[in-house]
Each structure stands twice: as structure tokens, then as C-alpha cells.
Length: 130
Image (tube, rainbow, N blue to C red; front, side):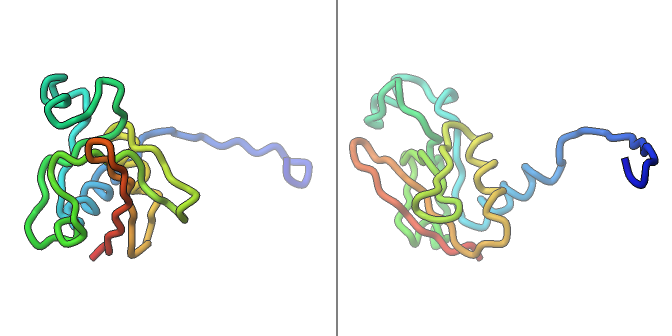
């Protein structure tokens, strides 16, 4: 109610079409590609040193001289989280949807950090977004 008048609005809910495009564009700028664990065979995961209970996305390719490559990110590493605001605020990246959701939250930031697991070791990699 506003000034004792009832106002009616029509609302249409939908999916933002630019969500995936913006996130994939950022990933392209960073220079790597990812894949959901569910799309990788259990045998391959075991060969890479990851158990069936692993949670994250796998880096599939890293373009030479890209920000990801220069930071030390390599294929077959597992991204488990994206640092959004500060080191204490990380968003889990259990799959591509969660990963891209976290990337979208970066907004206009010029840097992003990823929690990356390689076998039994976990490290953080910070990349400048070109």
C-alpha cells in the first residue's frame, strides 16, 4: 500500500541469459576450461589421485601464457572453491553450476583466487582478470 492505494504489478520470473555467458567469458579470459567430476570416469579420477567422494571441478585445459598458466594452474587439478570477497568467504565449487555462480559474484573485481587440490595437497592460486 502506498498512500492508502493498492498497487498491482505483473512480475515475470526467468533466468538471466547473460549469467553463463559472463562467467564463461571470465573463464576464457583466465585461460582454462573445467569439467564436472560426474563427467569423468571413476578410473580416471583414481588415476589422478582423487577419490569417489571428491567434490569440485576438474581443470581440463590451460592455455599457454594465460593468467591461469602463469599462476601455475595445470590440467587435472581440482578446483574446490572460489574466493569471493576475502579469504574467509569462499564459495564451494562442487560442479560447474556452483563454479559459474561464484564467478558471477566477482562482479567487476580484477582478481580471483581458487582453492585447488592436487592429490592430497590444497593450495590457493590468485589470478588477475584481464
